Amino acid sequence: MKRRIALGASLTLALYGFAGWAYIALVALIHPRTLGLQLTHFAEFPHEDTFGEACFAVSIVSFFVYTFLRSSEGTDGG
Image (cartoon, rainbow, N blue to C red; front, top):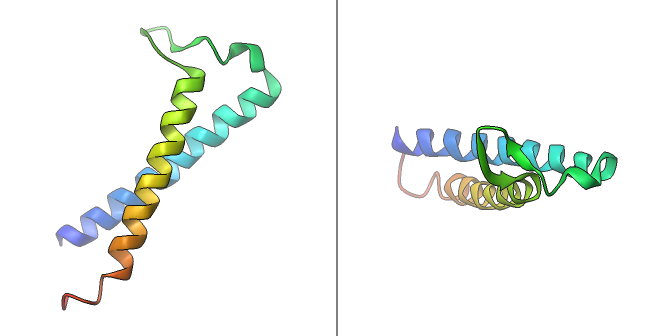
């Protein structure tokens, strides 16, 4: 049960992290001057470019964890 939760959570983080990175990548193409601005008016940090970097890192690490858990799924008997 814990493995299924970890698989679901890591896949969800990988997909949403990639979606956040793709959004910021498109913003960089269309409005590159806004990358240094804050992401939300609620807080001064993070900026758009920092958010994109964090999303990319979360996506990579989460997909690695998902792949690792998926590949070792049948080795422990359940």
